[in-house]
Image 1 (tube, rainbow, N blue to C red):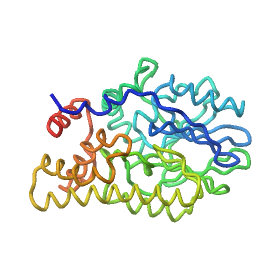
Image 2 (image 1 turned 90 degrees about the horizontal axis):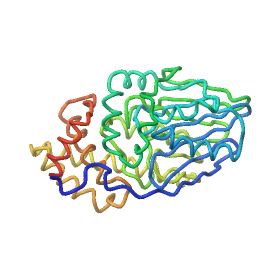
Image 3 (image 1 turned 30 degrees about the horizontal axis):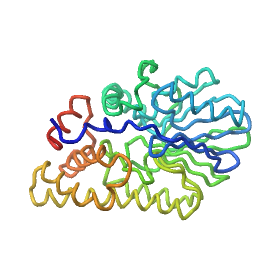
Length: 320
């Protein structure tokens, strides 16, 4: 048996939710390091960015939105394909949902590995998926795009953009150019450990530089508190970049010394723990993150599919 409880099985404490207005049209739904949801209230409709893990959890997002507007929630945007972000989509149908939008790369990932990822994540996050019976199945986009598209909520332009690979190959950011508010999905975290099991370590730092160049004044990260000043935005970007770079550097150094994955994991954990160990889900993410970094440094350009079985095998071999 593993000395550490598998994945997030020890994480059973309820989180306190914050619902915060960031600009005239933008709101952040955050919960102490749990997956965040972004909300944009336009002239004639509402857009939700990332839906929560289940329709039951989505009901709390709807409740907060209904405290400030009765406009229909017409759009759901998937920042990427991970189950914990998207399986709550059906919770918005009764609120006027018309379109679920994702990048074409995200759509392709759902085709290739959506089912395996769903089973894997349900196994990893018992608290977030405790109402899993309310999930009708995978969430499929009804609109896909490549590169960039704009949705107009009346006079408000909402830009959906792919600015590079990082957390996944399908990462989509949502940008309000008129208000300089950015919804980054899991490309940026704040006080929360980046999950990098599907990552492109070699690309991620440049993608963060591309985000930096947008000069956002406010940013909603994938996990952690909303960043409400340019200084906090800069901190979120640089801390995420440091983690990704420090981890990949450590793994590559271990490989050059021809260490095995187990040794590299233990050394990387020891190297990163003092600086990042207090971040949310550090112990959960690190085995997945190091395994992917080891694969990428060994020439596996694209991430291998995580299945529920592979999760447990990996955990036993690294944490057993």
